[in-house]
Image 1 (tube, rainbow, N blue to C red):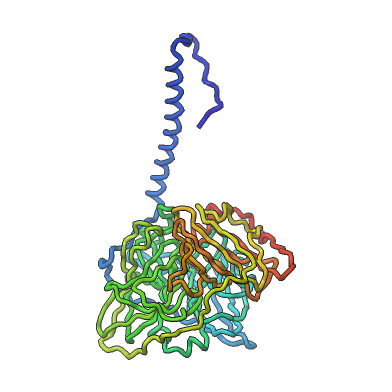
Image 2 (spheres, rainbow, N blue to C red):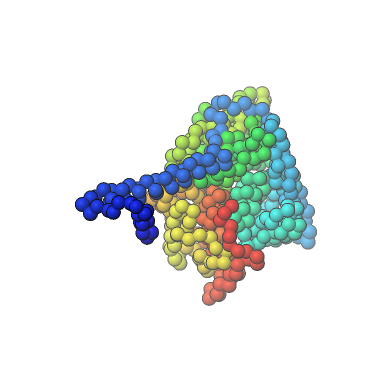
Length: 525
């Protein structure tokens, strides 16, 4: 650090400088130049310490085995729908509410058609659907259909805000395999705030191929959605919403499953299908069972795997999903836990309990999981038209911040590209792409493990690892409305760790404009 300010003149009556002793003057100047910056640094450290002491949420849930499972887990209701002129119509209303999670008091929350979270939407492949979304919040919101293949104008990103009191009616045809998807806000700069307050729900896609398999699928009986989130609470019961020590987002000390603290799940069948969603805004999980038992991983983000994968754990970053089938014996109780994740992702996180499965004294028989689940062809990049590289660093992608008025990528409809994605620093990151289910070609030059060999829309990015993805832009072109790609640690997304891509017809010129009223001044949330 240098200064252009000249030294102050000597005060009246001071002795003149002695030329024979210049070394002492230089030494004093050097000491001053060192001490002053150190004092500034000390003040900044002190201020940061005060901020973290009053604002940071960096807690760890109770250690494995310490949690008392006291509450039956809530199962989100199935959303009602009706068919109108051949279109299946759902209705969702985003609203404020209060929810009882902890003894110290009710928590101000947000929810769809209720005080917290939302109902599970179910539609079949080939159906045309419409969702009438009413915003009863005092603030603008959006609803993004995470994992859904649909036109950009229906995707629910930051370019389609729903003003307070307004109605949004996205319509599209469901055209993808059976899968566990979800929905949540995607308002630029405020996604973490609204998701953490409770705006989220599941969207299940059914198809004939999955329906023909001998798999658990009786919703709420042997097929359960599990939205796993972590929260911390203030003394009055309100959410403690500060940022974790690693600037990742909220890392809470209380695990909620479908909005239930200390949850248990009553099981009445020999096998149960658990649709796991990491609905946290920052925490990484590595789901396993307390006794290390093996289970069948049958599906990931975009649908069923080709064959079940025998596993004892399944890591999930925020936004990722996994479908597992686990066997139980009559009368047993077993805890679903999160093991300590990869040290490259939230180093130091300990093992903790998530949910207890309680098997009835007598269980209905369940068939074995089929050896073949779905046709999942090997990814082939031979026809990819171009390759692109995305480097995640700090809160930037390729050293740039999100700008709603800029198209970072322009792709041609019905073509494929290879995207190489790398996390270039020690902060944990993930990578989510809207509209598509991509395939992982390689990780550091090697084929992906079986658990990552299916269709994905979100992956965890460990530091200094390189993922090559095959992405495809099918069906929908729109030169004006973009899709997003971003880190799904929501505070990182809100800080600008996001980019936009337009899909256009061959020869079509992009015509992206910034949404009306947007100033792009969102990175202070």
